[in-house]
Length: 214
Image 1: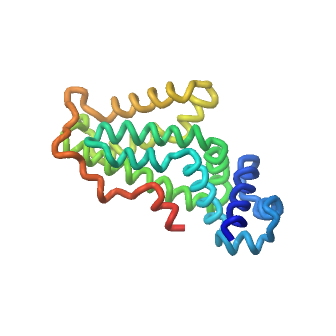
Image 2: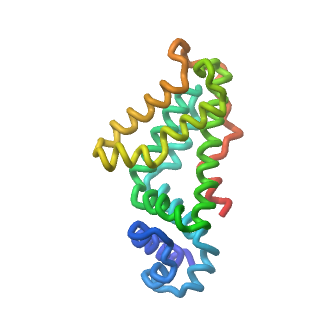
Image 3: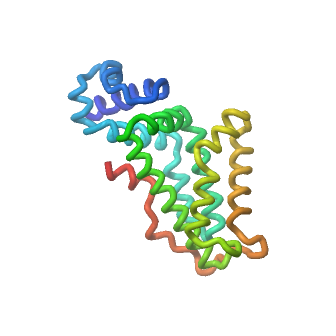
């Protein structure tokens, strides 16, 4: 069972980047299984996409990076770590991310799933913005919702695509540019990190949790 599931995920990782939809028949054929077997393992195209995303993120070691975010002692450190982890996802999984961005325009099921993922990412940024507000670090006129919206928009896949893919910037330069742009937009430069008491991130939604919902 586990080997069959892994074969299907591997086949999907090979085939998904080449199109704008989930070619279930082609994936099943590449994996050497029936379409019925594919659906028995994943339930739906959404379930298959969840498994592919999980596989890519595990291979890239990104869950460990997100756990580092939630060990941050203060809001600015968490923000910087979150932005770096996010841009590294876009970079390391670009073939799948690019597919997903295309597919969401034509596939309502994938669109629905990606809206859930967007909501998860924004909820994490809200948690970080709330901590920055507690520390008194948000710029004047920046409430929590506005700060989260700005951080979300300035770190979208389209931003990575323009800088890292179209312009050909190295990953480190993209990470630095996005991070400093967001920090400048959100944080009052006259303030400093508040390290005591350390930030409490116990209630935030962890990266694997959104995948577990599938």
